[in-house]
Length: 531
Image 1 (cartoon, rainbow, N blue to C red):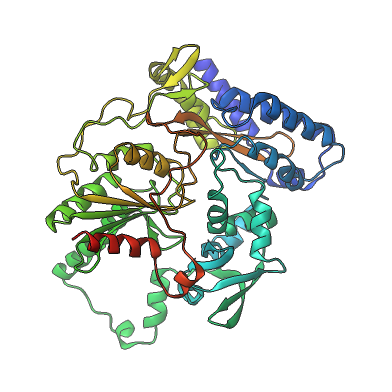
Image 2 (image 1 turned 60 degrees about the vertical axis):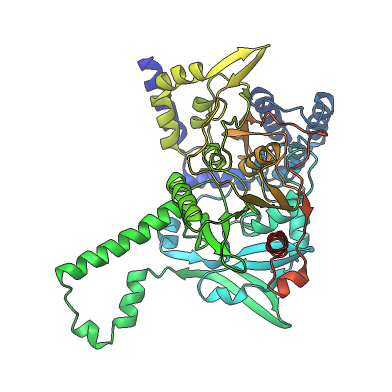
């Protein structure tokens, strides 16, 4: 076992020693049809080996035909990005939203890393939303915050609508769902644009706000730290010439205040890129006693402390109505939805069935994926003897299939201060993965009124849990996929659609121009009408 571990480490080190220049040359060159067909075969082989529900929404015969047709069509050399645009639409037809593909990006040399180290490109922090097939800015930082509410008209010489239609061809949702792509791609427009064009020195964009046209050129700018900005403000002031020495008590107050801010960021999941929090609790409505919990993602930070403190506060103000906002929540950790659901019920509960998988060692496969950084793969190799035992205990064979036990398969106990009032859950097409699994369980128990739009994630489960990545040997195009089928015991027919709203509300441009959130407005009116 020791010899195997050392050999694996050596191979990993050797495989990572290729130069940046060589890698960049490989993805810029034209790849021969033979090389591209090899990449197609290896990709389909991995899908068949690793994905437990490959033929859930498409027959094996039809998928075989699509991959065979793709190979037959590979008769001219292509660049990596051209090949990505050829294979991604085929993989999309599998209908599994967690199968994602990405064209390779150029790596930076040491000199380039040094040049860009203290620079930022503000275009990457702009957030967009698709409303009635028009793209609006919903978030921006610093001086660009003036763009919030503006409509994006053009990026260079392309309309955002044309870009979204182009990117939609390569992005799948779960099953036959159609609500995911428009919102999902708009919210990640900067990422897809970067994936297509790479690192650009500048990007010219045209916006329209209240009838005025705004032309904006995004470019690389020097990062300004909080300390630098304070120095800049105080450089010529008397305070800078005569700094005030803090007393011992004042220093302690300052340290404590910094600690409070850091703890708040830790429990609420602060995202410095967008200057937002993953989890927030506030009280809204006529008397400010309707609890409103916005959850942007089940990722990042100390979720247990957040929910514990949040439901204590909800209980202390005696709120009888709770809104859980899962709009644009694309998922995250299943352990977090287990925790949150514990506050929604007063009975023992099971979140999902045992997860079907294709491997007895999913954790090892995840860690040693060739798309992971060297340090992660090294950890996977070093820990493989221990992980092997853990994986074998967690997996078992039944009726010719392998199943893996996630936490939530066995009955979980409700929280002591579980919420007993009325619950509304807000959903839309970008409510995906774990947020859909949570919604499914809430539907099962008839625990909430769902308001909004059909979720992008499937009602009957999704293949996620742990993700396995693979970089194709020639084109360097990457694919990642879930390895565990995560599904609630509660199923509906027909399969392949999202969690449906009880009250369908889709925002309009008029709503956005008036500054109205129609889903929340409906909920508040419903609460008032029942008093």
